[in-house]
Image (cartoon, rainbow, N blue to C red):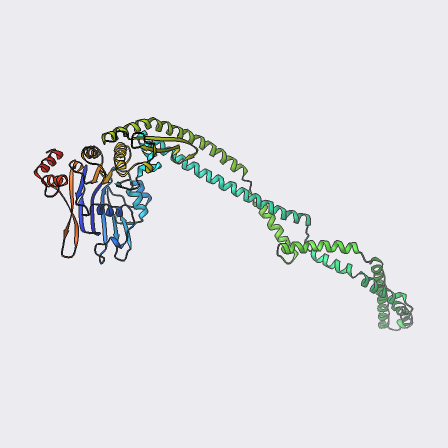
Length: 551
């Protein structure tokens, strides 16, 4: 409940402090006196943006401070979530510096405008003529139906489960996507691994193949040189082994003369035997060596496979390539099959959806039960406000998919006149009709929806006389359970006030400023009389004002 507002250096307000009582508070004043400026200042408290154009004095900062009694609104959890200190007396303050910087505070703690908007939307409901009204929004229309149906607890249960369901759906989608990506990755890695498996690479294989290829491509040189070596050692007429045999035989005639001669002779024999072995091995090499085109092709093919894999995986040798193979195998081994987890979560989602649809059906049934009475009660109220042929109709259809509020698609249609087609509120109601309809709707559901403070700005637009009188009665009845603040030009509505404030302009040395004061009972009679007949009021108007007030 709004207890007090203090305004300094805002628009044409130099300094203003107002304490608001319970019940019905009426604000009146001359056109242009600044009544709606109060709502602009209150808008700052509710998180609306502002700039330096609102500064009364461009050299001083502007501030607006509002005090609320929030004892009954159960906001402890919200304050805890936002890290704010809770107090039953809530103090909200907005400051706008001459440079344009704006700051907001809740109980002296700096906050964002989003927090202000969230916090105050449950504290103050402002209706201004020609505004885009809440009742035009399907979400608010459904909220009203739920309030009348007593769906608060059931709806909270549904919304909590719906939140859990959506989280499960998102997780399921993520797992499916992860599994799809994993399958694609596995498919790619498996293709690479298959290449390695087919290649059957072996440690040191590349060097061996490169040496073999060199030998195969040098077969003619090998055969030629090994043959020449055999001939030179033992087959030519002057072969080395034959010459060495003759020399050994000749030297053997003196070997017995000295031990050193014997050693030389033995060494000659050893050399001859070694050369004979070399000739024998060279002969074997020559016989074994033939140019083998098929072997060259096979070796080249094998080496080309290795070179291709090295290029593909951007490595320079076989050891690095084998390391790549090991890494791919390790990645493949690390992948787990998510199929079982997906199937389990799918089953959970189906179960959650089934439970939600049951709750949604219960919500729908309770909503349907109050819709007809809501339509009839609104019509009765509209009749009391001289709209005998005005009706509302609640259009309700069932959604295929679950929504945050269930399976109902609800919208309120309005036919203001006899024979009128039922159309959405935004397409059919005039300003005056919308004012009366809004008052009827809010008076009917105010007891069910948390609307602690309702502020009406010229709710009486387009009405007068008996209709205005009846609107005043509705506002007075509404003020028995809610704090009502009404800006009005209607004397019939002003007469219903429990507290009556008068907004006026006065001149100081520099400029015109707005001021405001609470009227005494005598001043109220005079103000309402002026609203009835003009200034100065007639005696008849004063008598009429007293009659309206009931004194």
